[in-house]
Picture 1 (cartoon, rainbow, N blue to C red):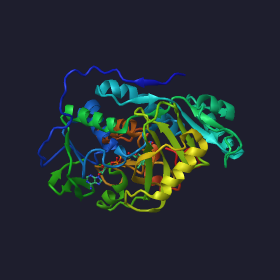
Picture 2 (picture 1 turned 60 degrees about the vertical axis):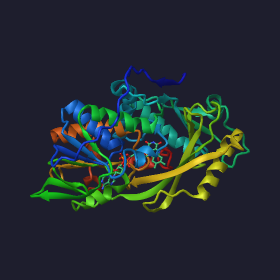
Picture 3 (picture 1 turned 180 degrees about the horizontal axis):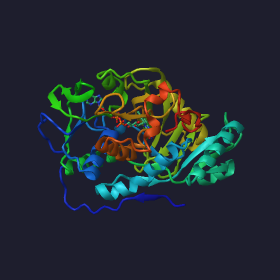
Picture 4 (picture 1 turned 180 degrees about the vertical axis):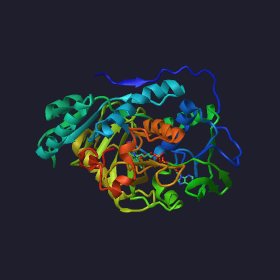
Amino acid sequence: MAPRIFSRLTRKKKQRVLQRHSLKGSYDAVIIGGGLHGLATAYFLAKERGMTDVAVIERRYIGFGGSGRNTAIVRANQRTKENLPLYAEGLELWPKLTDELDFNLMFFNCGNLNLAHSEAALGSMRLLVASAQFHGIKSEILDAKQCKEIVPILDISDRLTYPIMGGMYHPPGGTVRHDAVVWGLAQGVTNHGVHIHQGTEVTGINVHKGRVVSVETDKGAISTPLVLNAAGGYSTLISAMVGIQLPIHVLTIQAMVTQPLKPILHHVVSSGGYHCYANQTLKGEIATGAHMDPWPNYTTDVSAHYIKHQAEALTELMPCLKGVKFMRSWAGLADMTPDMAPIIDGNDHIQGYFMDCGWGYFGFKSGAVIGKYMAEFMATGRYPDRLAPFTLRRYEDHRLMGEIANPVNYGPWN
Ligand SMILES: Cc1cc2nc3c(=O)[nH]c(=O)nc-3n(C[C@H](O)[C@H](O)[C@H](O)COP(=O)(O)OP(=O)(O)OC[C@H]3O[C@@H](n4cnc5c(N)ncnc54)[C@H](O)[C@@H]3O)c2cc1C
């Protein structure tokens, strides 16, 4: 199927995306974190729930966290019955949001190909494909020759350290421009009257008789009955402010791009065996990643070791990339949970305190759809069915989710 780029924009006049507001002493809701999850929740609170007296508090600048650092891969071929429909709905939202926000989010519906380098990997992929198909999500198994047909620059010979035995092809996936999403949503929330306060750090949350009453920031206190922790890699620190310990450890994840090339790679390609994924951006760069430092830390340092690994992996899989230069590399924080699924919760421990965190290296693709359900949750106080499986209590109840056994996730592949 020919890839489609969704862009049907009608914007005529230019306007400032962000307006500055002074910090008010009270808001109906305070969202901590100006990443995709925080902004999407603010957007849907305002647009669908009529709650516009909302402040998004961002310590640095919008998109400073993972939302501005990810490799922009979106897909719905998860493993579990809880995740599959949620991510499928998330995929369908990108073209709708592009229209609605009147902002080109550059959804590139190019499809994702996950390579298998062993019979065992192919077997796991068959299970994934069956689960996806059961939920009406397009996904199929390809043999090595078929992989080569859709990605001609792949080497499918047996010269490879880990020869390609086949793959799982997921046509509805692709990429969305990450900073466009951040700015599009920021414009959307601003148009609805929501205040975004950049350069403002939340330093405390006050709870009285089991209810949130106010938030402390380095620019002053804010009275509010509703707080959302959407602080990504810093979410454990925010939760500690209300005495809730989260089973999250923070790892650094790195990515990089090559110099721009003419179009040669028309799909997102990932390989568990090579610990590497790549796609060609609309600018022509090959964006590639997968490496996580295996020790917890809060730095965003990159390492020469990883650049070397990535060059070796990419050029084995796609030998025509030999000699291509890397232009930039960067890193961000991944807030990892024990079962590769997020923690989405609210009101259970403290009235008015909500959490949307633990998104690891897969929280970009889900950001918009989660924002929609999170807004419903915060506005009504009722747990939407779609979010109910992701409660924090599942860890206490030993009901870990099965996503960790997904060979596409267990990578990381994004
Ligand atoms: C290199 C890399 C590649 C990735 N690739 C993909 C991918 O291809 N596909 C995918 O789905 N996911 C990917 N991810 C994961 C994805 O980027 C994250 O899961 C997602 O962006 C999380 O969004 P968020 O809004 O929850 O958090 P963030 O975007 O991290 O936002 C949290 C914000 O909270 C702010 N904050 C923290 N503490 C405070 C405080 N005290 N007061 C005020 N503000 C505060 C931070 O400054 C930050 O801006 C990748 C991540 C990285 C790092």
